[in-house]
Image (cartoon, helix red, strand yellow):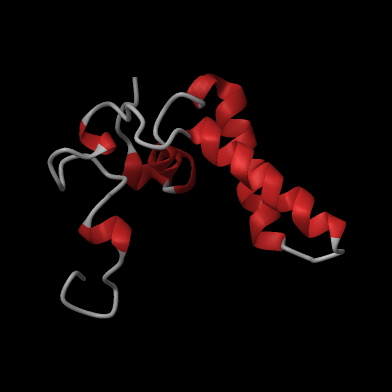
Length: 97
């Protein structure tokens, strides 16, 4: 994937799955670089801005709902990439203690 059109920042630099690149939060029990709580805050701000101009942002709204629930479950201090546990299905069966 890194050598084709599937390459992206998460694949090359900041993978959410443990064991791929040393020094990333996924290899450090998801201790944050940028926390899920901060991502949730930013998504709330973006959602509020969209509402203020009557913009429809269905994907942003869904992301906010997912991060909000993730944070309410006690994961707000984990790195934002730990959200992969929620959206990745059974392929992402690893601990985030």
